[in-house]
Length: 239
Image (cartoon, one colour):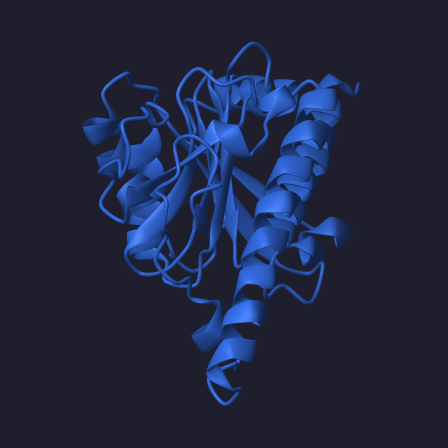
């Protein structure tokens, strides 16, 4: 990045993790940096495209929802507070440290701490997406007492990273909503990275968080969650 960086971004961002994670270390330095920049720009473009898609589906009404990208071990890109995610562009993103401190005067989403927690707990996570889809919101309310939704024998479970068969049982945690992020993060902590759980969780009456090794992976997970939760809701209405 340079002096043409969008508002909310530092004039010069630290290098991203792409060179190391994509095997570019053996490339000449100038070529590696060029490829690294192209990958980063593609991820930002993918995030903006996903935001528009989710908005068109009605998953981020008003200014709800928040998204982030892990740039490297020390830096994240986060949606700014109050931005309409349905119309997200690069000006709606800001840089912050891996522990959630803004690198500019912009204000990050109020739930930035939950993104930080996911990245700290799950080293392979590179993108975190949070939406308020109707299916996730209603399913979270109906399952609040059980504190989880158990999914099994769905073909679409194979949309989740590492799942290769429908013959598996996975759970989605459901945690109580809270306006204070510290107790909310504490309630989520026991489930992050735990075997048998999906790459996401529900917040009661609020929405869903999903993550992945790229924007495409996280968006695929979110798409699968929406389909599966809709299936669960349809089954509860069946005679």
